[in-house]
Length: 292
Ligand code: AMP
Image 1 (cartoon, rainbow, N blue to C red):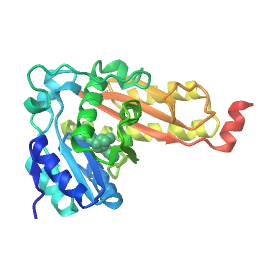
Image 2 (cartoon, helix red, strand yellow; image 1 turned 120 degrees about the horizontal axis):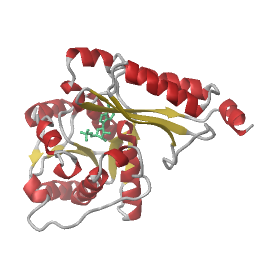
Image 3 (cartoon, protein in one colour; image 1 turned 30 degrees about the vertical axis):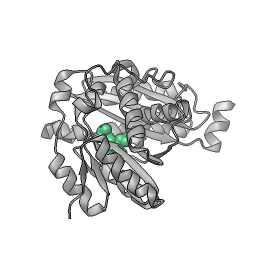
Image 4 (spheres, rainbow, N blue to C red; image 1 turned 135 degrees about the vertical axis):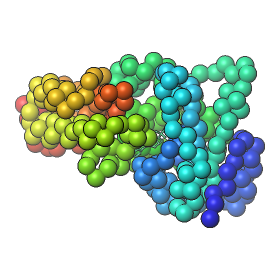
């Protein structure tokens, strides 16, 4: 069993046009490859919702901040295709960087507001790269629905905003973060961790969940996050970029747990940057306490 591969927009559009003639509903799952269970969960969710699923594989040079990071990014197209075929995904779109950004390419999609702070503060240009490529993928595929992981929560907001602002008729579906058994959020970057780093890595998620539980139980947001920062450092993380509570709906900073929130973190373990987040649905008790 093999998954058909389209390498040009023309091939992709021909396949989608044939589906459209038959009245089929189409989804796209954008990825940078090196597929793991997190990616595959998006594909499964898409297959449940629509008739035809396009998975895209493009290591987008515009969203990398450093040439070294781009060069080190795993490229495993053959293995990725082999993982997708048994699921029943319908086409793998693997565009060439020279076709995506030909000589003279001059357009950047830049989303304000939700890109302020968090990863936006530490990865200049990253979300412009994401927004530009995602807008292109939406327009190239013409999909009805797109699936994204909550793992990249700020990115999810960027994508929702750009679809809304540019009137791209696509529904954005968010899927929960898939974790390793020890709690570490799955990521293509986890493979870069040494055995001892891999052992320490899940402490980040554990500390995040613990802090979320304490805040939900009524503890002070700022004091709890200060303690959590110390715990993350003690766990072996060399640099904490951010650990913040933000509003679920619009990513506004929160210092009181008075509405649904997200606790988001980015920290470095050796040379590897890991991000994670946990949902904090507002509970009646917590809201009352914060408002009191
Ligand atoms: P990437 O290949 O890292 O660009 O990710 C492609 C898509 O997979 C994005 O929508 C990510 O949010 C999503 N994704 C990555 N890791 C996970 C995970 N552990 N659980 C759920 N979705 C994920």
